[in-house]
Length: 266
Image (cartoon, rainbow, N blue to C red; front, side, top):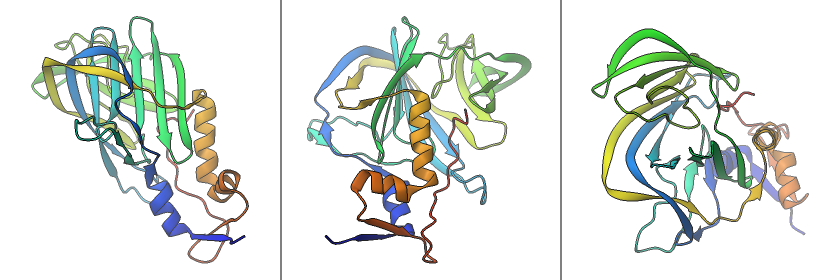
């Protein structure tokens, strides 16, 4: 049987930098709610904090209804009348192609993540983040905002929230403030979510959960899987595709690892 050799540069371009998963039917979904608001966030992040501070960008959407909210990559699951299925091609660094659905009434959230390591899903309680609200204020997108600080999953964050939007929510997993979060960043400057668009829905946009076959897991196990892949992609790929895979760095070394600066450090 032929042995497969992969150069690390090609591997990083095709596997680390981009997450490609098999197409799935975007006509199969459950409607959970309809959106009252649509917020667009710009995420700036540093994928490799050990070797330079180059930043990358991605765009994300937060839909908020009466019972549910959904946060997702703007390239994720764009449903059109012309196509029944699609294949996502989303940068897997940063927070990648994660989808977070919060059931605000039940106090639970479902996290769906698809990348080259697989299709994963877990459920956990909406985090009860403990914020310290300060007296600092500033205007963001025309809204009077106030600053709050917290420690969450290994990072210290500064958030700017407004009482003018009476919704306890924000980008990614953030929330638990007496108003809506328009901007939040970790103090080291590795991750920053900035609201760049606010729309009050006139036509109710459905909040849906796609019927994607995924492996049930939990947050800790998924984070360990992602770290194992980045620390030793050779062993990870061999476990996935068999022993007929060989990966070498540009210098011929078999000791290959990928930069890994996850948003969750704990």
